[in-house]
Length: 136
Image 1 (cartoon, rainbow, N blue to C red):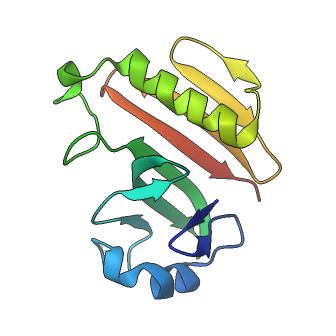
Image 2 (spheres, rainbow, N blue to C red):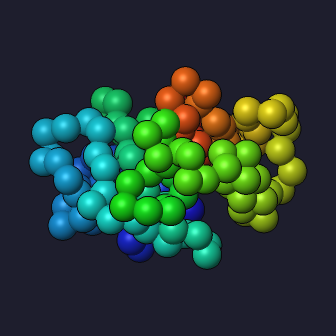
C-alpha cells in the first residue's frame, strides 16, 4: 500500500514516516501514535488513518472510512448503518487483497504476506475500521 508516495509496510521507520508526513500530522515526532489531519484517498476510498509505531517501526495502521469530519463512532453511528460500512470495507479489501480467510458478522480477516488485516465493527464504541497488523 502506498500513501503520500510512501510504501506502508513493516519496514517503515518512524524517521522516514516523520520526514514524509510531518506536514500532515496532528502530533509531534515524539509520539508513537500518529493521526493525519485530513483523510487520505487509497484506491478509490477516502480514509482517516492512524499509524502506530513500536520500537521506531510501524506496528499497525488503522483506516476508518471518511464519511464526515470525524471517523464513524458511537456518537455519530446513527447516521450510518455499520453493517453497510463494513460491507464497503470488505469489498474494498477483497478487491485489493483477494478472498478473506475468516468472516463473521462483526469481523473479517485477511492474511497477506505483509500483514494480518481485520475489518471490524466494535459494538461497544460503534467504530467500524480496518486494522493492518504488520508481521515482524
